Length: 571
Image (cartoon, rainbow, N blue to C red; front, top):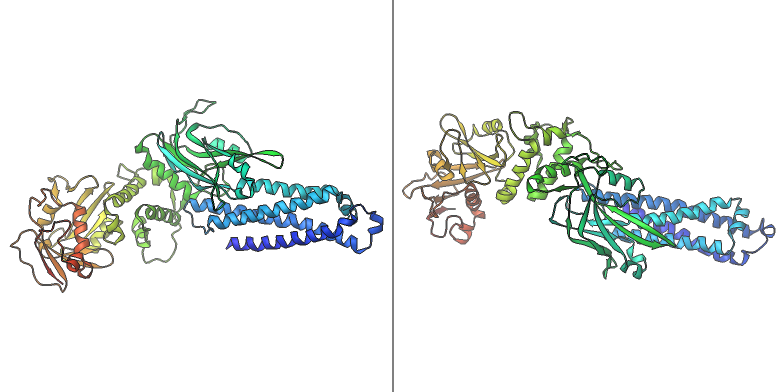
């Protein structure tokens, strides 16, 4: 790991510091000696060695600084949910503090040599110009100043989508804060503001401009230090007060999908100078209404997933490889649902050959994903995917994680899958003709062989068929006699045998080694309502396999049907 490599370099730097300190002590009696009496003696060799140590100070320090900078950049990309391995913040803080202390020790050595007028003597004996020596010293001071700046980071980034007048939180942390004077830390304040793309680029180009597009209410906080010597400031209950959509100079209306950042500003007095430190968050989207959330999430998804390092804010490519988009969608799905999309999901989602081992190289375009409607539909791919994700999160997360919803499969593929299977076999898939809906495809002993029912809306409990009256799930299943005999639920991995009865008199063929017979009352449902898809999924979960079934194990009534439901169980 990179942190181990940095630790090794820090030990080597510490070795150089200690040896140079010994040489400086040995040379202290000779600081005012005549150089002509030292030439050719072992004292000249010591001065030459000291010069070499100072040069190595700079080389090692610059190398370590670049490593720490790379670690902090990786940590920011880790916060984007990118595939980078980073150490925990405690380890990063330890490295930063050790390096800051090393730079302080090196600066003390430079200062000692300067105060004792040893620079001229050393440069004369080592054939070195004083300008070079002073440049080494300046580089150490600059590294220390830059370390103070880059070690202020977001431990917790603000929400990527912030709604006007709604609270947001963030936490910043100073990884070398414990090395600063406690009185200095206690007096430090962090002030948050909202900046746009142009302002971000100006700051990254070295400007200390404090322009903003919106003030942040409750956005000024004091730094604190805890018992673990962690210096931090918590931005809590902050609010964006306004969203300036017009350019301040030209008056041109800005795009509604423009991205912003939360910039935190603080100032510290160090080494007889005031240092302004400006910390910029990951990109955020500002919205004024909940209906803007869906598209804003797409913007953030694309930015976090495909932005390049050292980019101009907030540039992202318009075209990316299919497999990269699949990986990003999988991570979003995992964050929302609790488990990532599988390769089978990707293949079904993008129509790839599941038997192919080659990585697809075709590219996908931002406009095709989030702006242009799917051909023949009045919605985009992102709208369809987002609402499928929301449907699972709101209604069926547990059943998705259990593998009971096949979800991403084309209607024709579902038909081909079900045709050779036993009558009554069915599966749940996302509707392709609408978004936020699921459909059920069922294998039947009539024409057509596979029938589709749906789509089911996340807001309704009924299924709809074109040009037909609304039907509840209970009515739908009742229409198919085969489903009264035995239903097999295809999950993509296994079959679960379930038998349903809608009347007490219905007889069941003894055809399964393990099965449950459950009496589902006809219309109306005992509670006065027809069962919903969610009810049925919960029921399937309970009775799908006897060894796991709480009804078998505990002898309890169904929590869906109630304790009084009539059940006949054979296990």
